[in-house]
Amino acid sequence: MFLKGPDLAVTRYALSLRRRDMHCLVGIITGHVALNRHLKLIGVKDNSICPLYSEEEDTALHFLGQCPALATIRQRVLGTHPLTALELGKVKFLNLIRFAHSPGRFTTPWGALGMRTGHNRRLSAGQEKVRPEEKVKVVM
Image (cartoon, rainbow, N blue to C red; front, side, top):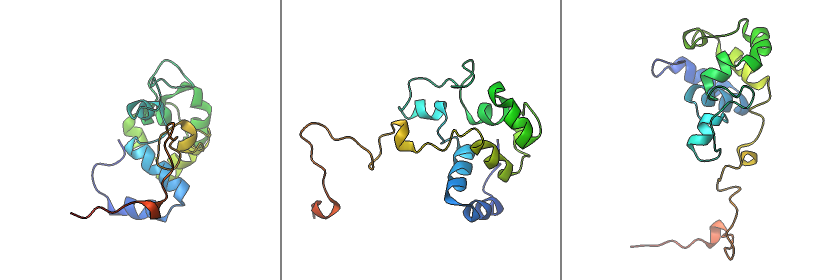
């Protein structure tokens, strides 16, 4: 939708962004972002339906270009509603980032969404937290 292949200019641009904006842009481009379709695929959510417009799947294309609940914000930030995948491919990345941050959907840390990571994993009963210096190195 956004990239046809490797692009050094896009890479340089992404690396020049603040971490929060780079995370958002990469997530939108790859689809690995806190939208329900991705969260369902990784086992965090039970369904992939859009929380704002419960008739469609919550994908990057739906969120950025088609969700009727975001039409006013989309019109203000991107200049039109709805947007097709082809039209979204022509939008400047900075505007995509601005739009993505506008509704506040990507301000929630992954941990708050219930994602099981090494930083917020709950311990099972009887399981103790192991400090890195306590890990045993096995040599064969």
